[in-house]
Length: 114
Image (tube, rainbow, N blue to C red):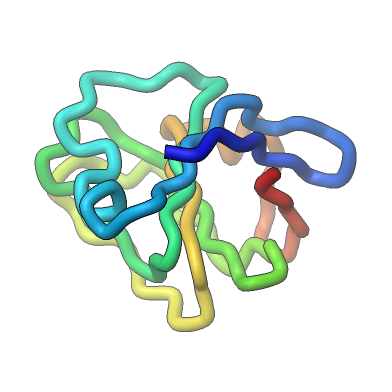
């Protein structure tokens, strides 16, 4: 997987982001992972809906448009749930539950993944 950071303007929000590069990486996502640090995120693209099958912990999911605009945020999605389908989303960032509130992320924010 490629490494990146999640930024809002000049501010680094999540310094350690893995970017999926294959179908299998997208399919696996964070399944079977026991936990992730608050400084970690997984960027899945293309993606406009997630599932929480075989997950061990809840997540916040940030749905992004092609230009990095936050279209929707699903907070605190628990294992074995299915996320909302966001038709215009081209990718999602999965982070620990509570991260979006802690960072003050909102729909309409412009993010970059570099």
